[in-house]
Image (cartoon, rainbow, N blue to C red; front, side, top):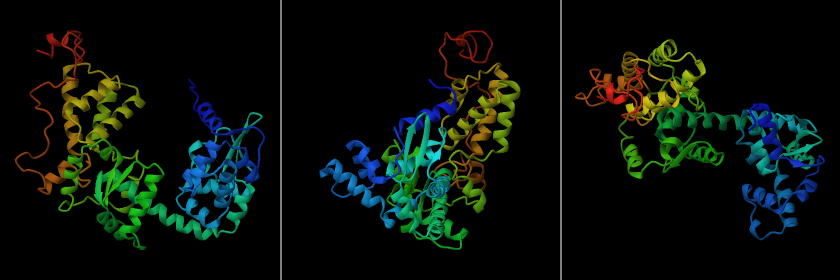
Length: 388
């Protein structure tokens, strides 16, 4: 297994490259490909009648499609900022020679046939064929970039909403978008953009004008999803300012609350000095709270990250801190509000109040066998210690 990330990237690039001399003419490149590769390109580009075509016919059909300015526009419009920057560079240069070029920057163009990669004499070359460059030169790229930028703005709102809310109706997202932007958008346009994002492999699901985070929708029972949808109409939404909302477009972003910071500092100071390991733990605990995981699942994250409880006092303190983290986390299906905020708004059962994950008079510790060492660190078997 390759440990060096640079070597891993180079190996991945080589796996998807044409091995041999660099070619720049589109017909020559297409004719050099296997029928299977041509069929894959034809499928992605939805070439009509492709299933009945011979290899030469597939190559000709792809050549005509990929040099059609209108088809090129439709492909380019759904690119992200990094892909657009690469496109502009490829149009101007003969090729980009970089063995460690991030595969994700050009994989979208590669799978559609706008660019091809070659590995020759130990060097990786990524290029746009001459005929496609010529077709692109006939497009007003500045105008197209402006239109592409508008799409990117919509994509960011869709991604942010899926990440923050977990589930939201498109008409509510349209209202949020239009309240924060001068150029309005329609529900139909937003649904189209969401469909494009799904085609690009974004982790979202659109079902009957309801947008779901893919982690929430994939694998969930239909009854559970129906229950979430049923409660959407009367539910208010937490809507931060535009700058804060769009931070959630990054699926790795989350609000580092004071409660999370306190938990992180406690673990670092008392349980584990490995900063990276603790940060990964906090990341996973935060996501578990977003998903409304059980206390046992949250405790299990400590085991999974190999961060043991050294004393019963540490275990009890962590349980208390986890309760505060849970109650102050923005949860999927709760309109982006925390339980603390919902309680203040009287939108959760007043009899229950804030979720009390654990009775502080009890010791709730990670799942462990009765004859295994107690995770509190006492050195006794679990059944002789906290398993009594």
